[in-house]
Image (cartoon, rainbow, N blue to C red):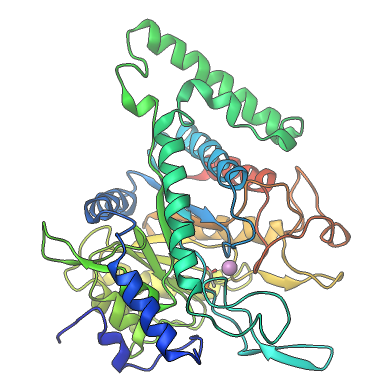
Length: 444
Ligand code: PEP
Ligand code: CO
């Protein structure tokens, strides 16, 4: 079956905006197609090799970031706080698991959102749903909710600037292991987790001093001084992805150069739908969400379509069942894939199956359910002799109150209103994310 970057247009497609201004859409697509790629295909291949290691249990995948990036929250402190949190979690996991950690951000392109309904109703007024800043605006007015193709250009520019700052920070010294203490964020320094992290940093400091005395320091070992964060997002808006799809001159393969890795959401993974068609043709490592409605035969077919050469590290299956469903729905899928001998990298998204409405009216997730899903994911793999290769989280380096619970900050339903800033789903704040990382460190 032939494939081109635009062959998806011949297939049914879900969760898309309806642009009224076609001329503007065409001109935006043409402009984006002429822009430079945001990533280099060889980087995507390196990530694939690293994910292959994770699939064999030799490394661990830590993927996380905003549910939805926003134009309004685009600034250096937000990016820096997120990186500091990623670096802290990386340290905790590396130190306890003794494995390399592959850091992948939901960042520099995570703008398009699938929604449960096409319309949102407030006080008897019905307007098109907010679909992410790359499509429309969150304010509840007719003008704001109208899809605007020029937002794709703004998303591209924001992604480019975000990626630029990430590369600058991580290569320019922020990730230097002599700075582990400084990654602690101001608002958690004094709580129990900040202190626990500080103790770990002191151990790393001692190890660094010892190594330096042996002649090994960041002057001779660049790994001690810099690191890499790969980018990822849900490639939902295919007009944008197609425009950034480029042929790699080294291999003659097509890559989606909007991001190192992209994934397909649980609502758009239909086997005969446009998203599967687009994804099957690109060389990037790709993810696919796997929710409770997936059945084992469908999953096997999907793996064949998305990873026809059965490459290691190519396909990350991101399981998101919910704490109360994973024990029933996940084992039959895992069993079937294990028997098939197909190569996949399993990770756990303990966020999207655990959304609930709090008594105070906010969309939230309870930390206990998140922990429970993660633990069950590991136990199920252990009983099956398969590899739990990673974790996929919605989190922020900021001090928000969006998910309830956790020992370190014990957020209650009534606390949610205090700093509920997400554009879409509730994220773990930095304390909650560190608490999860410490728990993970004990079981990875
Ligand atoms: C997401 O990752 O933000 C998302 C919408 O997930 P899912 O497709 O699993 O619902
Ligand atoms: Co989400």
